[in-house]
Image 1 (cartoon, helix red, strand yellow):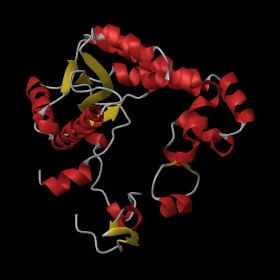
Image 2 (image 1 turned 90 degrees about the vertical axis):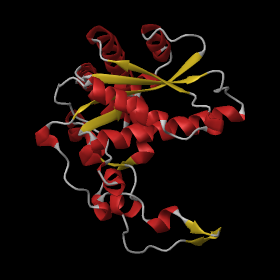
Image 3 (image 1 turned 90 degrees about the horizontal axis):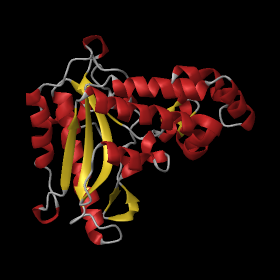
Length: 265
């Protein structure tokens, strides 16, 4: 695939995969793609765990489901992330960031106009919406053919030291290599975030994955093949709610905004 096309096809897959196991060849390609990312002094601080064992995935999924429920209960999720909600197409077009509320999970949509109020939070709790979302998240993770754990070596990743920044930057580039490759392979990928939100859950994952003392677990992703009937159409970047050049870039100094121009990708 042409690189520019890969950029356009790079998406987050929020729905289920088609259930096919990720082939050994594609798993190997994922790690090789990550290994070609740049790193400080070629330190290559990243390590990966490829998780395709059903029992291990089930344990991770159980934590993912439970932490989703905990995050949604009492409105913790909405209080933490309310600044990213866009409640109209006009607001979305102006800001070109965040999430338009019509993309939120189905069980939440009837409550979207009141979703940030205490009254709505109590109603959601009484209707068991948090538990329902937790069950959905557990099933989504458990049905994913492959889970990828990303770790950093503590020899390089030293929190509070400049090396930690270099490692985090390198890890981001390695994951982006994986993300672009997934688009080329007809695969989807999604960040598994909720265990990071609840104290103690991350330590549970470290135990399940038998993470040694010299490695730091940094992130989890679910991967799989995108169903044929769910293939995303070619993206129109003009309506993809990405910020315009003038909202992102300056010229020479921060005093001069880079003007918008014709699309080049």
